[in-house]
Length: 114
Image 1 (cartoon, helix red, strand yellow):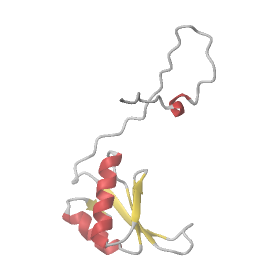
Image 2 (cartoon, one colour):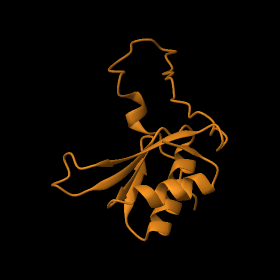
Image 3 (cartoon, one colour):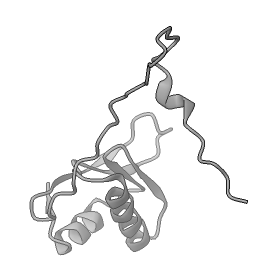
Image 4 (tube, one colour):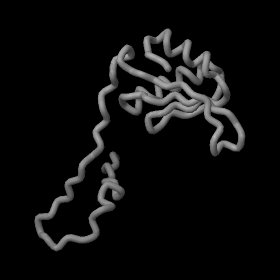
């Protein structure tokens, strides 16, 4: 027996109550921008220690594209560096100071890196 897809209540957080009989909630879904070509991407690689208990992380910011492409690039970088990290909200976090290695890997893939 197949389950019915649940409507996500979080989509309707702004609506409290409506007395209209024919009310339908229309919301503006955030549309992800298409991923730019690698030669047009301008990524910034930096070292960050703030709010991390003194631990160092390598930040890659400036990615323009879908969340899936960001996660794929993050996974590639984490695998090549052999460390953990995360990729969300337009930035990739690599645990440790791997600035030079990350710059080399990104430049090999055709990204413009600062």
